Image 1 (cartoon, rainbow, N blue to C red):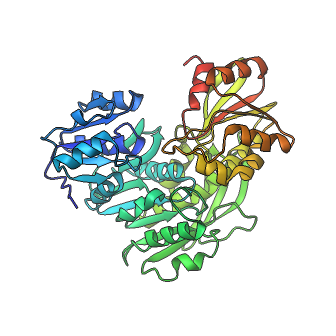
Image 2 (image 1 turned 180 degrees about the horizontal axis):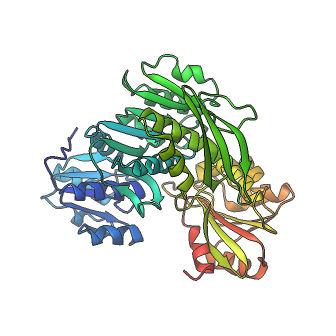
Image 3 (image 1 turned 60 degrees about the vertical axis):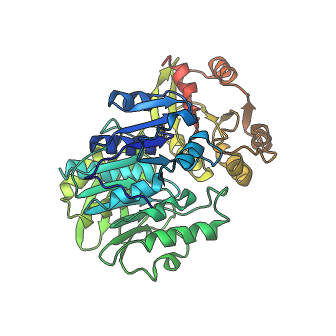
Length: 463
């Protein structure tokens, strides 16, 4: 495998440079003095930012973009063997790395790499850990799967001691990593276009945990089923925390005396082994963020960060883009955007929304991938029925081409059968017009999904 040495810059080309993770890696290499270029399907705010840094971007992936002077190319998991740039790279003999392979190589340049994994909550928890390290003046390098407000992006190039990154299980990409501290937030069925079943997913997370060295540490949610199966043979230290989804708190890190303000933001006492109890007040809503904060606090304690710094950082953390993000109001209707695209995430978001003040709760949901929609059809319907009104957009296919005989109309029928008001429109224009005619002052509107459904809220707000 081709090896990237940060001390020896080479010319690197990113196929799919506009993705959140890919753009962050491109920026990191550019800051290290590497000549960086790449391609993407269409111009975006991320691409514009990269171009402002001096990175050349081709729009449209063509064989002619691949030139002989390239030393290496980095590809996303979505790039297939029939991609014209992939074919050209192969023909010219230019070495190729996956995004995960490059990220793993970069991790080895840092004294303490911290990898945050899990089916849900990775971006928020990675950002919480980052906020603590930033406020502790530890100058971390950051690679986050979303826009983190404190740095105005998804990447920060810092010193060589701490590298905090989001670790995704899809295609087993996180098995290319070299963490010293790893977090496993939860393990559920997802990405079933790659994994066979939950047992296969659990095995992948087990292999990820086994990457930790003997002097490393795994921080893991105590509420994960059959926890011993994942941790019993690990050579490293294991610290557990309460994920706050079950009634009885458990784990080394547990919450007590939880209260919520009018925005459903929690204040709680963190109880921990060998350390005094610590009172924490959050600015992000939902009981799930108590669990995320406990996981981040456990990581901070491993690094011996002062309690006052950890509490202040968690208390000032304002969240990340597309995680219950308040975008504005139009006609007295609060417009929220959320990345939730799995039934558990939807239920969590709508439960948090229900605890805030509003009249009717509207959800515009864009299902993400045919595989996920078909596998969780009834679970999606049940979770979305927590809203008063549901509006469905077409399924966002992402990397998939086979519809599997599933559509948003199929999901609409399931939701309607549960007695929830539900509508499906094939175009964003139709959805926007319907919302303008039917949402009333005092309602809350959430655009939800991992695709481009956020554009509906932006249109309504005139952005």
